Image (tube, rainbow, N blue to C red):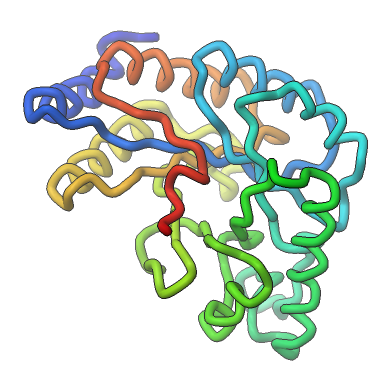
Length: 250
């Protein structure tokens, strides 16, 4: 960990500690399909710091090989990453799998099948949290998700909020810049973003903050940022790393 780099986060967390409070953070990693060396690197890093990770798995493109591989990965919590991560939006629009470009019944059928497939693979270990590909979903679908068996939804940012029978647990700091060739964002920029989210959460009463990663495109810079983050939060003694299940309301 580079001490000077992380000082803004440590200074903000000192305010939490002085108030007798702890910040709730959680980690979500997207696009899991099969065992890979980069996934193993993520598993080892989170295990080293005892940080749980919500692993968003693409149901249509995965199978027993990944499930067996995760058998002993105690800090990994499987989540449902849409159905096949296929784009159904026209070229002029942002990519979406779960938009309004297909009949709602077709989209919901895909989601039900995805939940069933991952439940068959992971059983009670699966958290019934839907992670829409590209963090986009038609608002018209949200009220139908609980009837399919989903208890939570996770996208990016602050726009969607929880509703009856559906907790919304979002991510807020994405360490990968897809528009820059999937490079890791500048660490100084990421630290500033995290500090801002921590201050916002402190003033809002302690809402959880989500960190978003993508192991398949992560490089040494991305994994280095996560190591620094885990080290800094451990040093602060003012952070609780939560599982996805911890953050789902009753």
